[in-house]
Image 1: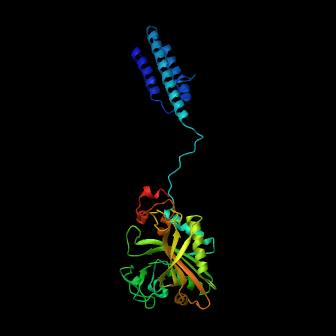
Image 2: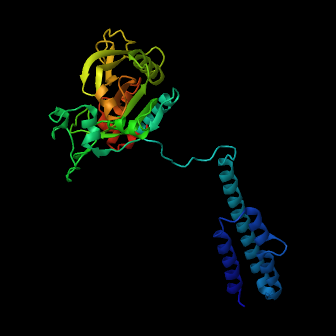
Length: 343
């Protein structure tokens, strides 16, 4: 072998060492400079080198060893720096996970509030017969709510007894269905939460929205029980000190009927300089004593039993919560992650 051949062997070993980056520095030191390392094997070749070339080969060996040591120090320093940046006591990065939609969160909270006072959570059809949505609720054939400009009708032949099929305009269709389920035997304490549909769309209405319907039927039920339930919900959902009030209104399926207002959480019910309520109160929905005709439709004797009912939009009720400041309920269904991730 010529002198150039020995020099090339040294250069090849150095080149191999320079490509090492991922192996631990300690393991590399053993591999290259240990007792049985690659450099020792290379040094052993000096015996085979002609005497006149030994000096030059020895110098090349020393140069190669120095450069390998420099490379190992560099790798060692890099690995120490990398290890220093890792704090094993820190918690790991959490995987990105989703959460319940804000409306689903509101439904769970509302359900739990009423379940604490003995209400039973139920769910009835969102696509139902005209009979349960209107007829059984004391609404005559010419009632405006049964107009096609207010209600989504399904294009299918009408049932002989139950009439047309509609997308439910309210959760009140569950009232008579619940009476039938219990075989017309009170007591009834129902909370029905479902999607409902109306032909309206603006900042405070969507064509699909959610309602929760409360129904209580038993002996001796009166307006005081209704008012107490409203006050309980107001304080539980909006916070201590929130009050409710009822104003005379007209619904076909309750008599007497009321509009329900809750005291404003922003001005504390004073109405003073409040842009939100302007009067100290904000409207949430309707309520009243169950109409005798509705009880009869459910097979219950109105001379023995009485009851109250209420039904409000989940979105409307939720947006009135303190601190939300949501002025357009359509945001809930926009799919905007920047909005939804706030909940």
